[in-house]
Length: 213
Image (cartoon, rainbow, N blue to C red; front, side, top):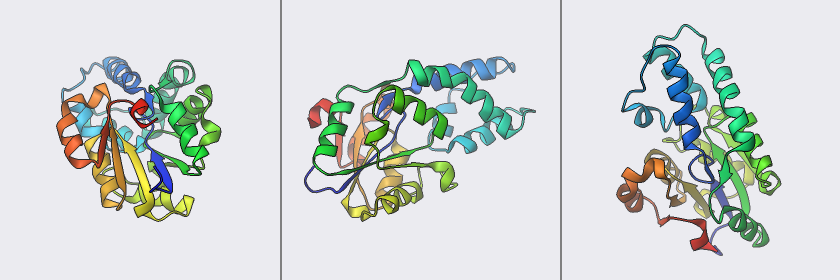
């Protein structure tokens, strides 16, 4: 921890256990329109920004609604869950407090939207711990690109080489490495099948933040 100046966290699947919310929304949203969820859906959208996912759904499933209307519907479906039923991963809160005490800057870099991320950070009592928040829609590219991580570091005024990124999916680990950053991959059930690749690509792999306390 003493070799880094900033910690940049992904939200979904990394800091909070929330991937189940989106699996549920995909089933309900597509089911309402007469579609089953394709087996490869998660792999196709996992690295995309919130808006890019809506664009993907509109094109792939020939949805009449506008991209904005799709995003609004998802927000409505997810907001209650993020406000009440999405919780931090084991040891995450303690680890964030330890980073803060050590004088390490803390940032969030997520594909999620500001209303949802704010809802869950506030309900879990950690919103005030973050020095900056960056969403992929600010850079118009997904997390397989380095842009979101570079912008997060720029907001903190920290050199990319002095940042540790925490992520749970292969594409995002790759994007952070392209930014010249160190990466800790975090276990999540949704990306369990990629465990060996994540271990290989990341600088460190953890099953729980308790390992870092």
